Image (cartoon, rainbow over all chains, first blue to last red):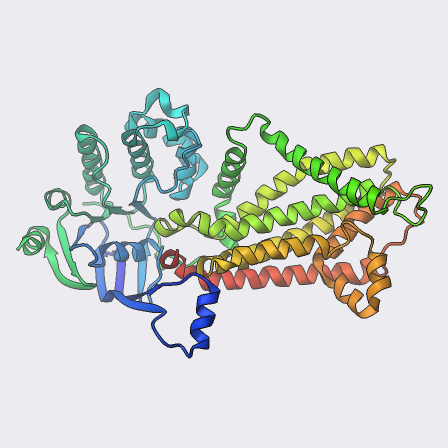
Length: 241
Length: 293
């Protein structure tokens, strides 16, 4: 079977700069580059990951282990310093839902705007609009400005847009904590349905019970290195130990 | 399990430059519409502000420069410019367009940082949408200008109308190019937006908006005047004068020499070079936007 995601020998180094002004940079240069203007930090070290089409993969690890950075490389938000990333088909991220929402626009406008940001065409949004509203349970508030929404409503609408984008590869980062419990169950059911339809899923979450239910394969990251890659149950037990 | 394998392997995150814009035209449209909706939210006058602001600005300059400093031609001041009000306003609308386009596009990347950090989309969309929004705001000012022109007895020919389109295009390309350049630079150094503010202040006075080009030639000599003329904004403003102000006068006023044979092509080429450079710089820098923002 063909690979949906091919990450080969990717390294990423972050430069933590302390300054955002030209003045300080010039002073630093004038002083003969003494002192540290920036600090380097390896977020990913020679990471390789092949994901077949239809696989469900969980990226596990403690905070700062490089999970989200890896996800950002797959989505194209970041480019690797060395190595290469290839993906097949359309990739959409359920990464921090609501990033593309504007508080002063109505729910309806935000569905269109966010849908387009996530790569949907006008026709696709028109077709799916009713389904998106129905799934979000927003109902009559769809024409209200989203700044008046409760945080639960806001997340429900954002999640609903994201799951209706229908890409080949789904990237899910720490968003399963949306809404109240009934809605959360609905989200998880929707994600499981996507997996059953043969979509490729890559999930980042600290909720280990949850990822064990959704994913078959677990990849354990630590300080930017892949420590383990195999069945989810083993990955979870390793992380817990 | 049946899976459909669609498409080839591609590298995510590598933008195709302006080619992406055509594919994302729907998103561009929505971004522009969002800006227009959000701009005057909660204000009573709404879009009317787009008329009120330039009208007040025009009035202030007209009274101070035209009347007090004597740029307007009158019985006691025969050396002034006839129809100075139209002369002034036709330049102001173009400078306003340039200022708004460049000012907003230079800030657009940092302002949309939240989105750029999380979701991949063609980032050129943001500066280009800013320029687009400015073009929409330019329209009501143009309407006011046209009414003023008609009152002053405007009778343009086709060539003069084409000159206005040319002037607008030159300034639009320049603003987009500089907007991409400074917008990308602003991610790394926030000084960039202050630099732009300064640049915009200079731009207003470095082209014959308030005064006449003949004053520059008379005071500074041919060499400096040639440099002055090479500024694409100067060419744009002079083209606007030719289109809107010149047809309201008796035709005795002199237009800058070689405006069409030399300065129009030069202005257009400089603008397009700046656009190409801006796009090139933008593409080189955009790979690191997500981590620098």
